[in-house]
Figure 1 (cartoon, rainbow, N blue to C red):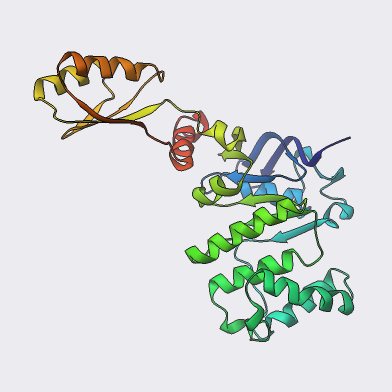
Figure 2 (figure 1 turned 45 degrees about the vertical axis):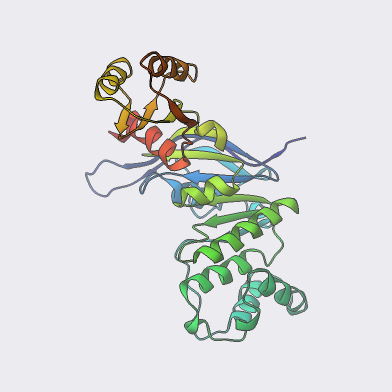
Length: 312
């Protein structure tokens, strides 16, 4: 049994740049899969090809070569979109409609009956925190409220696969926390979520696996914990730090940075921290604390991008 909700095989996309201009390479030989019932994050700097990949998956663009499928159906096959919901980036809803009217409009275009939409609307507005605003004109909605409304419409057809492009853009911290909770609950219900976000902390908080694109190429794909697989770093606080000991420490460990009585150092292996501790003890320096420094997804992301040859 195939447990992949999305499959991308050697996908390449080139855009024509016009008369006598070389084509623009948007994607180059991308292969990845998204398993059913996981939250999958897509990361990359501007121009990395993230939006192009989503458009190919949803059938609004055709690849130059390679293939992409949703639940076994190619992106150009209309059946691939029957089980999908989509919240695009920078979406626009008719400002003269109320939130509730908008759901009826989009639901009708998706082929849902008024009875079905009416039965789902209240629960969706409750879910995204817009119950008291559902009969208010959209022109009065804030950016965060627009994002919540967009999430409601993406869930209207009870999709098994949900594409979310910057879902927390413009949403305040409380709202972002609520949306994270919604996404985790959707996963518990068996949904698959494909999340494109520039907020790396959001991705780190909810995603099971992450793919990083840079200049149209796949830099790395795997569990979030795997992306944080960088050299170990430690913070050592001492009772005092004689200048001579500080000089000896930075000579033995060139990556060490000393600020007052605090040493921050990046090592090749975790065991090397014992060598620093031994050095300090031999010099009579008392340790107050030793703690590993947690590397954030943002730091790991920047290290991967800066170390990727395609970035040059």
